[in-house]
Image (cartoon, rainbow, N blue to C red; front, side, top):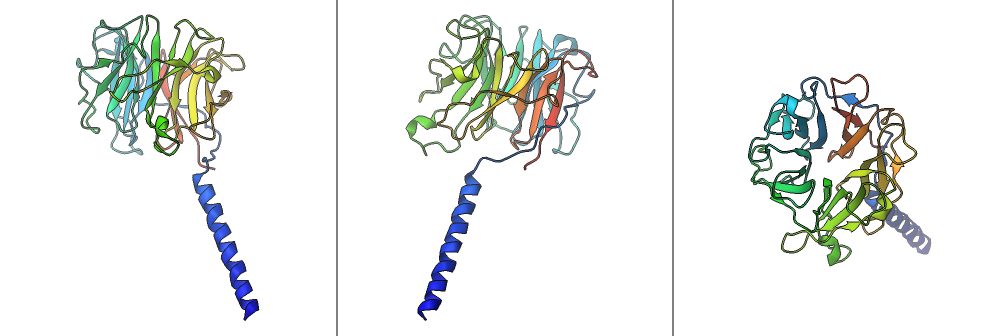
Length: 318
């Protein structure tokens, strides 16, 4: 009987070890394949004019972007949306978001909060602090792409007398697990304000309890001597995409990625996505979908319809 109990203990210990290993693997960062060659979104979305700054909704059915005045609208660049019935359907004809959002000035490079209620974008409209400011619009109904309310300026914590643009919003899904400080939503963006290390640097501002945005701080590990722009963060906070003309690229500007093991860790040195995604032209403004496997970008590579076009690249779960 004593031998049998010993065998039971061994089986139990093995089972516990397997469960612990499964638990650790479940919490580990996902591994992915390399990115595919970008595919042009085609003549329904793109035009002979400028399309840039893509942002995809959480359900993958609404693609927001900026388009130049040649496409029509209200100003130098307006915000538009293209919709589709499902992720397997083609994109529909883009629709202008209308005069509540767009003005006679420039509105460009939208980004969405993960819950879909907020849209952040750049504008040089009157009422700002500098050359271009970050603004935000709220909607109550997250599946109504025309429910956006009058945009508000994000204030002097984020905006300055210089260029402030390219917002990327992050709200920690594990809020509170590592202390109360982790609960603040963060807005990453780029700016050419004094005190940086390059022409355009990456900054981050934390949202205050009253909803305002705190004083922006330089993110030195993401900033270099050249132009670093539009930081977009994966929803778990472990991967960040930006575009830059820093040394080591393949063209006028490339898309780069930075990773970290935990939200509390500093960002790692940005790594170029490589020549499959980046080419001799400009490849910019990457925006990651909620499935973590789809990246939208703007590019003026050969074969497009004109100006900057919108493209998509994908990867698979390893």
